[in-house]
Amino acid sequence: MCGRFIQCTSGDRLAERFHLPAIPALMPRYNVAPSQPVLAIRMTELGQREAVALRWGFVPAWSPEPRTPYSTINARAETVADKPTYRQAFRQRRCLIPADGFYEWRKEGSRKQPYCIAPADGAPLAFAGLWEHWERDGQVVESCTILVTQANALIAPIHDRMPVILTPENEARWLDPMLTDLAVLKPLLVPCPVERLRIWPVSTAVNAPGHGGPELMAPLNAGFDL
Image 1 (cartoon, helix red, strand yellow):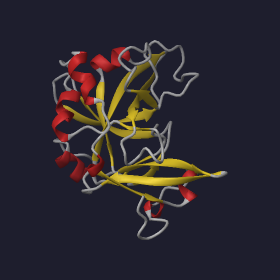
Image 2 (tube, helix red, strand yellow):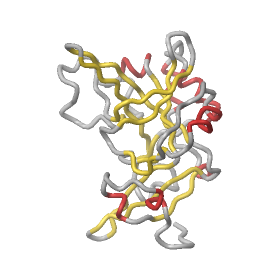
Image 3 (tube, helix red, strand yellow):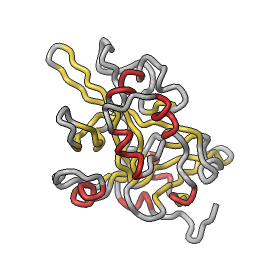
């Protein structure tokens, strides 16, 4: 799964990286947690990319309340096209969620050790996401989920799942609202190559959502090599 991640790239750099109009100044965030707003990129009705804030935790349009009785921060790549919660959004409301890294935890005895996984080249990653518009009695919630797939060889010793990280070449395909062919979409939802990422252990301070400074990414042991 993906339960915490990092969004710390400046708006100007994100605008250049994802071919967007100018983005307002953004507050760097090193410990984004479920239910918080996240920056996402989607297509407008005019076919242009836009950056929006979406609540992390998908709320289906047909839900009677702006919440669900089960976790929707992640959607499994293997079943997302068929699950009632996600299948319509999978066909019509896909988005990119920029990320400068994410955290996973490995069980070590009676405790869990957090690890930071970040892009090897320092450029922002693009998670595959879905978004949804929920509205009742004048209340509006726009929300999102991050797709997850089986872990690659780098992440597997830590966790059996990882976010779907799209290649730059496939980001435009993922955003294209005219593309609904499952035979084209599903092959995009695979583990990213090991060489795109690097990993190191970090302090358990990241366990608390209230902690959010850049020190959360600091390596716990210099020279660590998994």
